[in-house]
Image 1 (cartoon, helix red, strand yellow):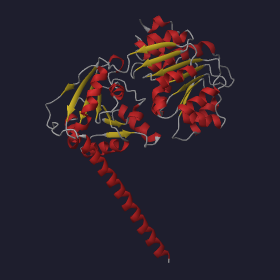
Image 2: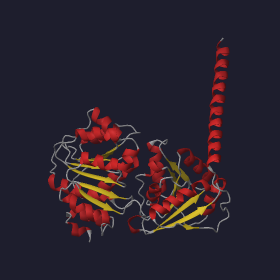
Image 3: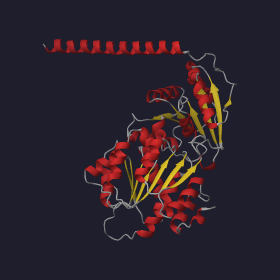
Length: 422
């Protein structure tokens, strides 16, 4: 099957040829005909399988066929809600790419930046709006956005939306949508909470399930390096000696850890940047653009910030920290080896993470190839229950000591300031 077999209109086919889209992915081949037939769709597919095109192409075709634009103001007819800024930007770029030979306009709104440019675009009129929940509700409350004319509604990355606590925002948005609309609902996983939410959004939906989260793309080679916690950074530098690893997406468990990794890489003159929730939107976008443009060799990301990172032909993903949820591992490595391209995943595992690897292999039903030929082998053993308990007590003691010292220092500074005033 090709995209021409899907009965797409010439302007969209021309745009798809410009980006060398010839054969649809499984999720696209299954969902696009249903969406073109105006069915509500609930789609389950892991990251990197082409979900955005699966809903963007039918919406563009419907609106291109239905909408005649004269001098009157455009009203928002399609709404896509997604959890993160990065993903919202990527989706809007895809609408622009696929719809560039139509007369349709789209814009993207998200928090963390000034709303002025966004409200200007809205005043000028748009057909398709891509939004994160918080900024959407904010601009609705200010009167810049009305959902009265929505014909097509998409909820993307629904599982991550719930993980990030957006459920109440989503319900507020749904309450403002017209009853008569087509709804498309996409999620990488389908826990019961997602199924219940889908029942509130969809009417007699057609289900499409492709590449369940327990599977990894066959095009991705997976490797495991075991080491001690103290040697992780040294092992990372050893791995990065490979000159072919010129563009690497690296995952850290925490925001603080991501920043520390970047500092350590900079000491070795390796260009790197971090992307996480404590960075401003401008900082995050600059880091992503620099990485795409080859100005940064390594992009260090946390899991939530990484949703929406879509980089053509990205070959290398490194798990600096092994995730404790095996599904997260599948999502992470799915950032490489996209759309049939080859990818390489490398995981650096310390003793306390050995059990996480076992869970990952159980979920994916495949063994990860272990690389033993490196200078930093794992010699420590995992802590037992008593040792873990003692370590937690020590961490709490140090934390209390830190805050006690900080409070004492603040008190001394305040007293000194008062004496100076006298």
